[in-house]
View 1: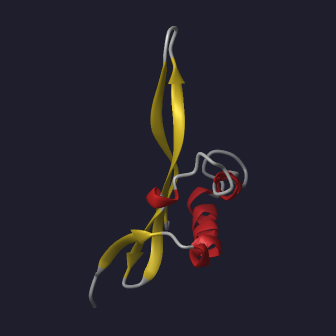
View 2: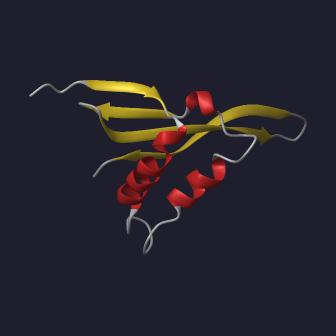
Amino acid sequence: MNNDLTIRLETSEDFFVVERLTRDAFWNKYRPGCLEPYVLHQFRKSENFVKELSLILELNGRIIGHIMFAKSKIICKDKVVPVLTFGPFSILP
């Protein structure tokens, strides 16, 4: 069997599968149930969501991982520093 890994951009057709993957990756890890699929769902509606950095990992054509990035900022005493944050970062258990 081939073990072909592919990294590609997420499409809207992937949303349901990715949210289910995120649920499976985080279910009962840090608290009963999980909030990460909801967080991901909400981020996709945000102006801070960077769709060009919402990436899928596939193994032989099956989605096994996902990572997304969002614009954020660090507020210092005298300046604001723009940064990117990532997460949730999900891998199929």
